[in-house]
Amino acid sequence: MAAVAAKPNVLVACALLLLAVGCQASPFWPLEIGYYHDKCPQAEAVVKGVMEKAISQNPGNGAAMIRMLFHDCFVEGCDASVLLDPTRFSPTPEKLSPPNDPTLRGFKLIDAIKDALEAACPGVVSCADIVAFAVRDASCILSRGKVNFQMPSGRRDGTFSNASEPLKFLAPPTSNLSDLVVSFVIKGLNTEDLVVLSGAHTIGRSHCSSFVSDRLNTPSDINGGLAAFLQGQCPADATPGETARMVVENAKIPGWWEDRFEKAMVKMAGIEVKTGYQGQIRKSCRAINHY
Ligand code: HEM
Ligand SMILES: *[C@@H]1O[C@H](CO)[C@@H](O)[C@H](O)[C@H]1NC(C)=O
Ligand SMILES: *[C@@H]1O[C@H](CO)[C@@H](O)[C@H](O)[C@H]1NC(C)=O
Image 1: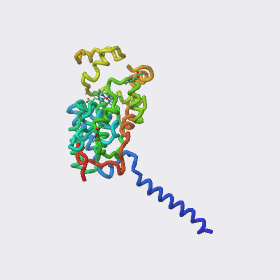
Image 2: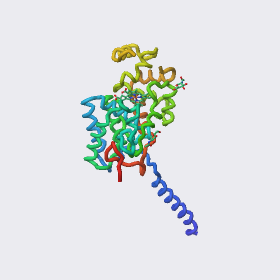
Image 3: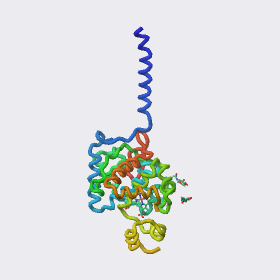
């Protein structure tokens, strides 16, 4: 009797074991907070140290990282594909595409962080995670601690980068609202994420060419004082309804935007990530490893 009853249990145990082995072999592992805790305990502190110094020298370094994450994550996922330099075999990577060239900045800062991490823990911390940690620190430092969140990690670096891709996924600044919403929805982000993340534009720089023709020289709901200030800065040459309400809430209710920005940044930093056995940990953020 006992032996007969044990049989199904053994079968169940075998099935569970197979399932466990199957799960372990799954190509996708979720990102986790503290991923480097055992592999490189000082990893996040090293990134923070370099970021604090870089932002104290020029706050634009923080803005550079925050835009870098967006341009990385929306193209091939958050896999540092935007950092790859041209080679003979891949002569036109993402960084040479119009949405990135010549306005995207911060590549040397990523190199500096990578150098510090390679000195501390060679071959362990991915470039994709470096960007994500740098952005978390930049957000915290530039908001004087008001935007303060933990960044899950465990991303691996991609090996493919092509200049045609950013043009498909990064909506141009001339886009109307519906095009912007669609560009976020196809990456799993919603209208509120679009509004909240666009709040990142309260920091950093823009070239006049990015906004003069269709934002300053046409009627819009830009604050009159700000519009006049921007017109003074640039040589001569609208968000209705629901999204406008969100913008007002973000501006008026203390802590509202910060709270949503933290969550939306983590969401964006999780787009199409490569984990587990996917991708690689680059030795240099500018080039894929050849084994
Ligand atoms: C919604 C679609 C978006 C459009 C059309 C857009 C467009 C732009 C443009 C045209 C610039 C100026 C580039 C230049 O002339 O130098 C810029 C800068 C910037 N963007 Fe966006 N952006 C978008 C979303 C985002 C998101 C989601 C983030 C991050 C959360 C972000 C963060 C930044 C930052 C921080 C800068 C300043 C960069 C610097 O100082 O170097 N943007 N963006
Ligand atoms: C990059 O994309 C262009 C245009 O789609 C294509 O002609 C080229 O072969 C691609 N390069 C690589 C390395 O995939
Ligand atoms: C937004 O712009 C696209 C072209 O990029 C156009 O096809 C679409 O009709 C526009 N939508 C609205 C609501 O204006």
